[in-house]
Image (tube, rainbow, N blue to C red):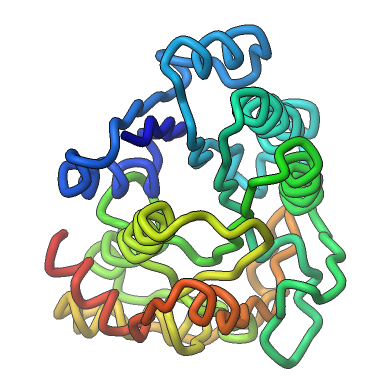
Length: 284
């Protein structure tokens, strides 16, 4: 029986893993925690929890993800995205366990024109990106059996995200300007959750991996697809440039991740982003 700790259980990905957990009842015992159940920034508490509950796998979904707020909250961002994952990795390694650390496309500078591979040079441009990269390195250094999964443009039926915001604004407004010169691959958190469970099932292979849904679009294309699937036709969406929508944190212009490694290592198939979006909107 695998004892699995899932941190950040109230976030998009943590919630999706909770939905899938019952299918694995015969092989896994899950411990879902958020800050009320386990403060991952408390090293002693982390070690005690992992020892007492015989945890063999940690899936760390907890993070400081508000990229704009991160610019003025570097200390807290570093604590949650770098130091705390290090505590989790050290503690699970001390009992011979393994860890999956969820990371981000923000570790790259977004200046490429071809999909980023795991071994490509990182160059984060934001506090969020720098702390997430430091967290990756901390986890890999502290736990030999760990793997990092970088993802991008995450959305789900849970929490606040781009899909829900565009549906709300599409119904409230007659006009909407959305950035067209940033491209990436949307990721339905449920598809990432399924992949994480398949990896746990098949056995963790240490290293860095990339996961998003298949295909590429801009935020403008993404919005048009959301409105089309939701049946919103009363809102006119206009493409705008990045500089027309200033925000504190620099957004990567190109966020497309190459997923060849995760597909070949674990034998998984990944859905096209529009098919995944269709399922999510139906659920909403």
